[in-house]
Structures are given as C-alpha cells and as structure tokens.
Image (cartoon, rainbow, N blue to C red; front, side, top):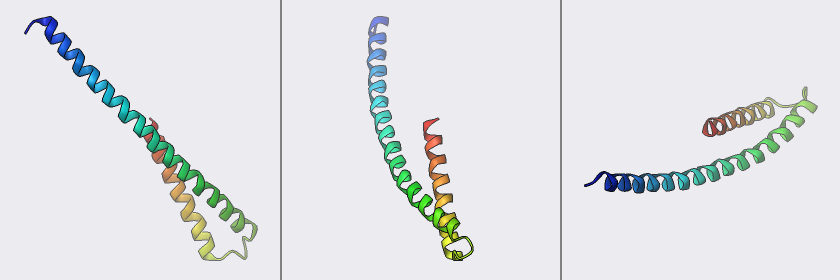
Length: 87
C-alpha cells in the first residue's frame, strides 16, 4: 500500500471518528439539557419549600426541615454533576 493510500485510509478513519464524536457530543448536550430542565423544576420546588420553612421557622416540623434539606442536597449534587459533564 502506498503512502498516499495509507493517508487516505487514515483520513477516512479520522472522518468517521469525528462524525461519531459529533453525534455523541450532540446527544450528550441533549442529555445535559434534559438533566438541567429537571433540576430547574426541582429548584422551584426547593425554593417554595425553603420559603415555607423559613417563614414558619419555629412552627416548621422537623420533617419539613429535613425535606427541604434533602431537596437542597439533591440539587447541589445534580448541579455538580452537570458542571463535571461540561468541563
């Protein structure tokens, strides 16, 4: 096989890998966007719950405080995961 043939073959393989990577990147971006959208809904629920707990701080049940804390921790982890995926 000549050097030109080898380079053409290499070029075709690189193009194939590049195209596959482009598709995977697009799919990954969609996955991250879907994950973001889900987290935004959770963020809204968290803010509502937090406002309730803070407004009724002394009257808020231990369960309500724990629920708000758990939602907050889950959101924190979710946003950290997105940050890692985007790096």
